[in-house]
Length: 474
Image (cartoon, rainbow, N blue to C red; front, side, top):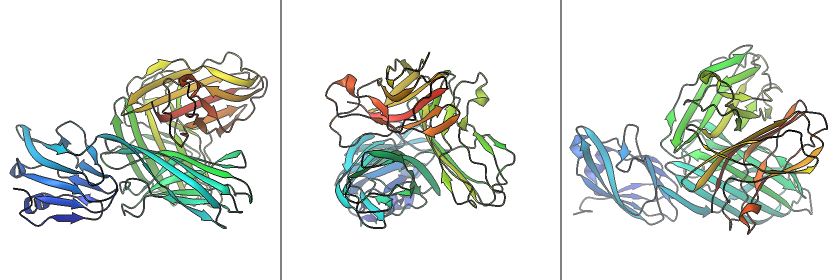
């Protein structure tokens, strides 16, 4: 009979130990968004059953410690608000233990949340804010829109909190895509999920630099990203550094496989850059050779006495015939200043098994770049579509805009437009282009991706566009 021993209460993320299971038949989570981790399992606990109750107004995550699994083969699941599950450890083969779960849980779930913004300087007049999330086997993908009806002279966004789950505490930053639009003009923002604490109150996206919100004008912040809740694996990548290796480099490198997608992030920080001038970071899995590139989200801290943040324009190179050379590179790397602080952060959703090709048809503004043939790849998992697109021309032909078709229709009915990872080459300059999906159209074919920040492609000069990322399908 369940409940004959006093229940154990959890108010923060943490481990459910074998002692907890032995001493309590009922475990209760009191705080929304936290992640509780089951032990890998020991023989003495086989067939011991307990109930886990989510006594909060939001979802919680349940994971299994390394070397453990749920009997369905996953490593994490979500329990909805006020839901409950029964857990029992079973021996599936000799000395192999897995957790069997019944009740209210989902391995892939979508939902909404309300982000709360903190502004710098004067407070703007805020409109309605929207947040949506997709929890898939321990990864939380999210999109956010913050609406401003009167900028009020605010110097920009400082942060927003209220993420639906607590990021795993891995002492890292996970970069996200963010734009701020002021009176119709979009600007890329440098921002990240703070994964340096697992405090339930610290579900925060921090903005390092933001455009000023003009008084008496409307504005909008749009943000898309992901973070680890549970179940990622560490990896040690091969690294090639230009000039010198940053001194005493502190790294956090973690990834997870979702179907044919490699999802992960890298943090590398140093108190002395040693004047590093370039970086090539290896992948944790063999990368398919598809004669293309896939954009990633990246931030760098260098220059200005080691206190200036920039976009290094990151990508995964999938063009090299040598497998070891198919790695993460950076088109606009800023050389570090010797004896000054330095940091590199990037997040990726890339091809770890071959994806399906699709025809990416582009509508260009004004002129069409000569001989521009994009390579499009996609796959689906857990209700999301993951894609990469890359194309190149030696003659931009004066193109002024870019609208491209998608491999699948994006989910309609959302109040947010997903921001993808992406960059553009114009002549010899690489820059972030903030691809955004229009998911408002009733006709499937009209739900396209456009570059919200497009630099006119000069006639007789080279142009590239590289896109990566994910979106909900529907």
